[in-house]
Image (cartoon, rainbow, N blue to C red):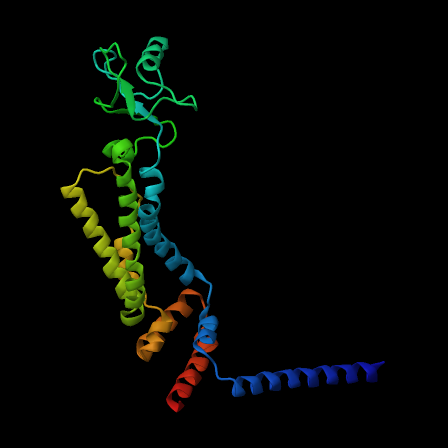
Length: 278
């Protein structure tokens, strides 16, 4: 039994040595890449989670603008307001009592769907019941979208095509992403993000001064201070051959992710030697 066990131990040691030799041979034949070094520094640790959190705050501010059209320019139920001589302060789409409902049914015709006409009402003192446009404005239904830009700018009836123009302008602004993406490749993600974020804040301040608008905000007070601590991407530093900055960044990543220098730095030195050879 003893001989058998000793033979088994010897064979297992030989197998381990063979595996080590295979790993070493594979590492010598296949040069280490930058992605491999990043994995050694920790490719999914506290460093990445912290920066991912603050980068998402920046993306959230842009997302508000992107999705605002769905709610701000929504298609609301609306009808003509009654004349002040008939019902004062007729700003609610739904009747507030039976008398109000009776007056609405008297002056505003209904369509085949049973809803009140959105853009026409009868004249007040006319025996022929002539239909006219809404001279007193519209009453909007706020039960779904609340107070929206459609109500603020009265983008209904003859002004409804203006909503399409608004959507076209917003989509045209989205084409700037094509330019920003190329700038990120040329000048780096960090510099491009800082410039576009500051520009976005400046434009918001300008529009707040010169325009009357509906505020819709998100708490992103930590975005501007974060721009100071934002790091450049390792791939950009490598593409620009900024190896000093690349080493400093990898050291920060490894330190934050609690990786020792022995775990990644020898591979990084080998990576640099391969770059000098090529």
